Image 1 (spheres, rainbow, N blue to C red):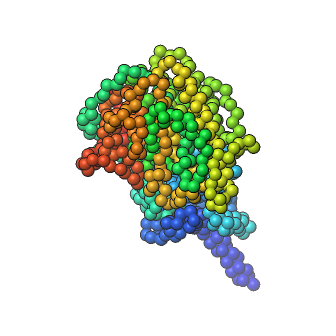
Image 2: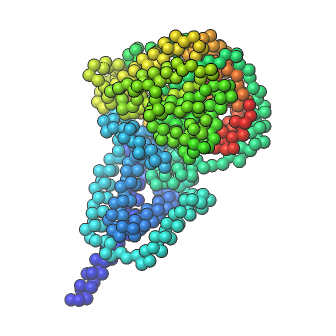
Image 3: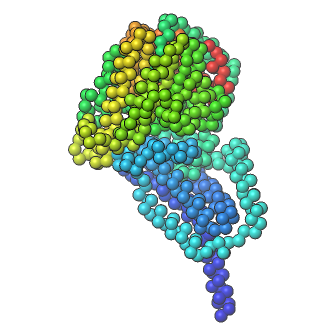
Length: 617
């Protein structure tokens, strides 16, 4: 009888130990399953993929989960509590990763985890139907199974069967291993090489990218942007720029405005959509009196900072390996070259305005590092914030009043003002009872939520156009020469648009039409309005990468150019589009290769290197 009791007790103990040690494996499988796509979202992405590198990535992720599980168990002395504390953040991260990939075509990164504290300012559950806030159907299976496993850990009192002798030693050793691994890049590169090699193709959003879990992406994102271009030496940078002479301007120094409008996009490009003419009447006014065209941005549906930095710095996002976080790791005391330096050298007062939190995308530190004379975030606005019931963000009408207030200030020097708006950020869900229906879609194609998202977005665009009209009226009323560049940072995240245009997530970045937004240049004085190639045509028929946009703007205004801007002229002619998966080339192959290599080197130098190029006029 006693032997039987001992055997029963031993079997119970062994079962509880097995239950304890199998949990990390179970959790890793859950995270893998949560990223399995629905065929309707990504028809070209394999449901499951097993190869040697994939197995190694799985085992490394399992090792990290096991270490975290053991550490939390030692600290809490309750395995079920450790499992809960580890599962909740990782499970939520996998849900966000699924949404981000199948809605935006990108994967989660460590910076996304940091920005989760701003999620309540950017998203509401109402947007689920119209803006792609969907989740894996496997959540209906994995979530209850995970809850059940954690419940068993608690009910079976697994902690009674697991004893760690020398808790402090084990805890210290595991913590030291993690610290050394993640703080020593050379060691991390060796240990996590399978993750880093696989993640190298994730920012390019290739359709044949390997299957990665959220843990793989988080590890890869930590080290992906930490690369070195050994070609970016002082001698090489000087040699590259010495081939380009500065160019004189017309001598006119206007007040110069740039408005990067959140998700601004021409809905007339949506197949089968009927659009009211009133939506873009003031933008058409800019086009009829100034220059216009389309610019290729590095992001779709999100990633505003990537577009912002590419335009403001004149550096290629593709040359920086497609980074989605150009401001990550920047401190306020760092130096971050941008066109702020150019305008400062020309005697301009430089102001940056963004009616949102300065902590988002680390902008407060980044724009301090750029050296702007004034930086205004939502708490710094000097005009009353008008109530705007259609959006959870500060309206473009308020932003316009802020820009007018800045231009009204009496200053001896001309002003350069960059504004990044927030109105029309997803989700697009709010309409008032008296709002008109400004678009019509084919019947029976879109769901009610998808159609509502398009209609709400159209109303927001109409309001943006009205605010733009107020700004243009004010510019026209000024005696002082004033210029405005207005463009969209990326296309909107609208599932209805993606469905009508047949946009597939896993090939999203392989089609240039998904990456272009409209721009227009407007002045209240007789500016040259010439193009880089010397023609006087006001429309640029071919799209070009965002890194050239400020050069195009300054050329149209007849502003002087330093050596770097003269180089951008040359690159614009031979390599007009330089995106991660798409390039468009003009002229001899040797000239294209020369410009691409130079753009890679100079972009790295300005954004991540020693900034030699910013010291050359």
